[in-house]
Image (cartoon, rainbow, N blue to C red; front, top):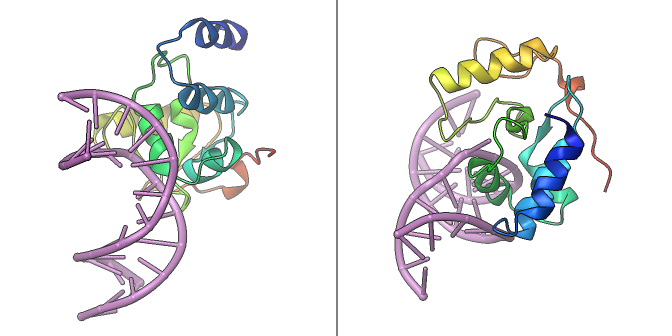
Length: 121
DNA sequence: ATGATCGTACTGC
DNA sequence: GCAGTACGATCAT
């Protein structure tokens, strides 16, 4: 699905809180082949709590159209996916990112830290 | 260098 | 309100 379509859907769907919309929109600004962190994402949308960002992504209304797999932790650990911190979901997350050129080591840590997208404030 | 704890903002109940 | 969370930073071992 195209980015524009998702943005439209987000605007139309009033069941989504403004905060969550901000999170999803910001996430859509991250191009394939890059990732961002919960904290940085939160900063951009004016929130100091990465947990809140995680919550928003967990309730991702348009998964997998919204690429929640491009969000990792500040310590470059892979974080979670679909409510799981480990297991096959995480494996899938790694595979998805690997396809986009973002690789993680055995410990689930991002290998190339240059792949962290620098969001503008 | 790990593990526990508190602080944080938001969601669900 | 209250409690839980896909986190982060700090304090205590």
